[in-house]
Length: 242
Image (cartoon, rainbow, N blue to C red):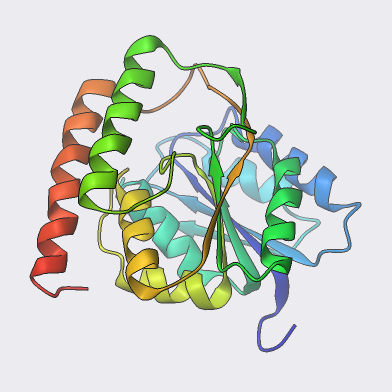
């Protein structure tokens, strides 16, 4: 395993997820129990006011884990960055706390890394994707509009930048997240922009996905914020801040 302690690190950003994090961790542990993969789980508690961290600790006692606590709600981008930079695995996966993409889909990523790719991106926009529970029409429209604008301003050739299921080689993950700056939901687009800029090989992979009715996304507010952040990425690039 070279200098890394684990085959795989799984980073999970979590904000007020005490009702869902337990089941998510149980599913992850159950799946990898039968895989020949030595893994760790990293839960980044993003300033939760509930018992997210306590529930996570109780579920993780049988496996290597880290619980990282943000002093206040800092955002998904901040939390994923913190988890990735703390990771000790050769491959680093981040996934949403609601496990909208089943953990079994990671097997598709393993094939991509075996083929020599640096980054595997889960996608709801591929021909092979299986969207089992769709978002409402407004969220789908806003998501597709965002991706069109993102492809103009930030990256090329990725059909779905925002699926919360992505994995990196340790080398790629550390290099990208050391440079990445956005703390909010637009960090995915920033990572893809940086990955293409730095020459990392990306494979977009269709995955199973189901919308969670308890999503924390505020459609109008977050969409406007993400649009603003797309321009921030462009300005940071032009200002040679990366």
